[in-house]
Image (cartoon, rainbow, N blue to C red; front, side, top):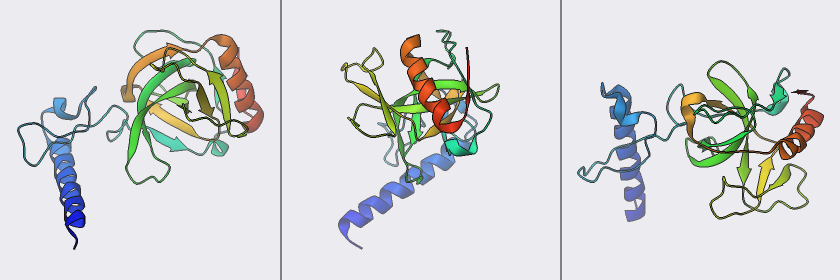
Length: 193
């Protein structure tokens, strides 16, 4: 095996061992709310710290939006520390490859799924002019660099309350209504005033 292959294998083994350790540890603080993925400074093997939205049972899950029939798109932002419809929050979002990788990114909460989960659509700052699966919502305080943001209207996520890293901003009602109109038109969901 090549030198780079050994390095990758070694990293995978370290991450796997750290994950097992984190999941079986009696010290819940190691993988709790607010943690990050990284290596400990005093450990040669490293430790795995999961981001909110990445841990078992609290992970952010991609859902086929065409499989959801009863989603009620609503607007009810409330800066109370919980994800609410109309808010842009940061959470860990899995990559499309569904191989366990992902990254922290902003998502727009569009409705409630259950007592402890909400539905959300992801945002990106990568330009998607003339792409029918993206809608520009302009810029806002959720992006520190003030870049234009685009809503990916072709992907839907289930976000656990403890999967939220932070509330970033409330999207104003007019921009939220534009997103809601596109989503309800495409998927047949119902907008709740």
